[in-house]
Each structure stands twice: as structure tokens, then as C-alpha cells.
View: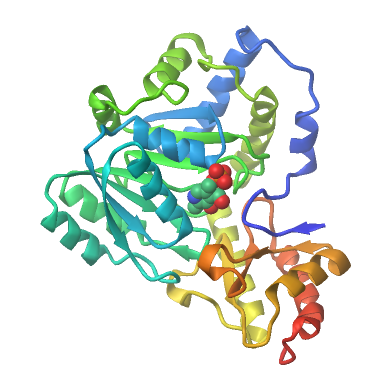
Length: 364
Ligand SMILES: Cc1ncc(COP(=O)(O)O)c(C=O)c1O
């Protein structure tokens, strides 16, 4: 099967097999060694010397943790949103009592760093900026290098949702001054859903010491204490996913981060070229199109649901539709993690066969 949704992503056999191992005591020496080595390898992938914590949660749990560990009710946060997941970040902050200033951009476009600069100039009391590195709902990668430079100019906290980018698209956490970066195991990491990984900078720890939002399960300070002092997590971790992670990270280290980033670039280019060769157009412009997910505009007459059904039932290819207001308007090809150009070729062949039957006759 070609599972080409933007997460969960396919898992290599050796990673799957690692998960069939018997349990170990999560308060015993085997787990100490495991969490220490997984955390050390993750730090390399985050390109950070700061702390990385592993939470048993989906990505949204990591986003919630980022908010409640750095902010207090009444704090001002600037939300830079370009789609569904940017809006979610803002919603979480609002739910916990932050005063959220929403800087929303048209879906399909990246955030304009100049507009971020203007919003920060107009709102000097903003404490944190929330931004999505790669907006999975629209297939757009933000120019995080430029946005982070602006946030640094104003010396604000920068909380980054890198759930569908980290480990696939370059994100030098420390070099760009990102204070909390969140990612999720089911995306580029070749691990099943269930773990959220977060980096926490020194500046974020200072904010953490003063942050008053309620937290218990998500408490970063407790997680750090358990990790540093005992090599444990405060709560029972998803042990099998740690087994998986060790093997997946070995693969990461064998391939090397620059090569992984380059492979995602090649795969992204291939996906975009194939789609265009069918006469279809991308939802975003090429210049900001993501290397982990390709969003394709549904042309007049195309029944997106019908297309996804034919692909799934007759070609064993699983793609994603559009979310919220993009439902029926786009479809998305996920290409992150365990993916090669050959996989995209297979998706492309299936699409060429299925598109005319779903109402689009002009396949090139
Ligand atoms: C950019 C982005 N943010 C947040 C999420 C939410 O993560 P999860 O579904 O793991 O809670 C996703 C997952 O689709 C995502 O792609």
C-alpha cells in the first residue's frame, strides 16, 4: 500500500519489528539508557544544544504543552497563522486565557515577515509569537529563518509548530533562536503516532519559571527533572515507541540530516513536477510549496472524494483531502519520512489512471 497522507506515515520493517520487543521496567536501567540515547540523537536532529523532552502525546499535546509552560493567563501572544494548524495554536492559547492577536494570512500563502515586524511594533507588550513552520493543511512552508530573525529583533519568545517539518525540512533550532519547537513521531520520524518531542531554550525556561497557566501532565520542569536526575519520564511513557525511535534514529544517523533534507527536496520537486505534468496546479505557489506535503488544487469537475476512493480501493494509494474550508477544493500528497522518488512515481501512475474517472479528463 502507498500510504501517502501527511501522517501517520509508513514505517520501515526494522522499526516495526523493534516494537514487538517485550516491555521493560520504565523505572529500570534499560529504559534509562534508552531515553538518554534517544534524547541525545533527537538533539542532533533538532540542531540544538538545549533541552529536548519527549512527551507521550500527539502533536497537539506538544503544542498545548508549549503554551501552558511559557505563558500566563492575560499574556499577549501574536499568532501568525496560515492555515488550520496555525489557527489551532492560537485557539489553544486563547483557551488557556492568553490574549491572542491573530495575524492571519490567506490560505495557500506564507506569512510575510514584514507584517510580523509591523504587528510586533504595534503591540510591544506581546510576550510570545506562535508560528507554524510547515502548514500541513495548505502545503506551505513558512520562511521561518526570516520570521525568527524578526522575532529576535523584538526579543520575544518564539514557539514553533514544526510537527510536519522537523527531521524532513531544515530547521536549525538554536541558530534561528526558536525557544520551543514541537514535532510529532508520526510525521517525518518513521515512528507510529504517540510521542511529541519538544525543545526548550534557556529563554523558554526563564518564561517557564514565571508561567502561571495550569499544567500537570505537561509540566516541562517536572519532565526535565525526571530526565536529568533519573533518566525517566514523570508518567508511564509509550515504551514501544521508544524502541521504535531508537531504530528510526539509527536510520537518520546513517543517512545524515543534510541528505535527509536533500531527499525531501528531491521528492517534493518530483511530486510537484508530476502533478503539473498532469495539467493540474498546485494550491500554493512554487516558491513556498512544502517538501513534505503537496497540496493540489481540484480543477473544475473533479470529485475529490471520488478520486480518493478510486485511488484507495483500486490502486491501494491513500491520499488526503482538504481540511475545513478546503474540503473538496484540494487534495494532498504526503511525502515525508520513509519516502523515495519511486514512491511518488507510483502515486503519479495511480493518479493518471484515476483522475479521468473522477471527472478530470485532461490528464497530460
Ligand atoms: C503542522 C501540524 N500541526 C499540528 C498537527 C497536529 O498534530 P496531531 O494530529 O499529532 O495532534 C499536525 C498534524 O496533522 C500538523 O501537521
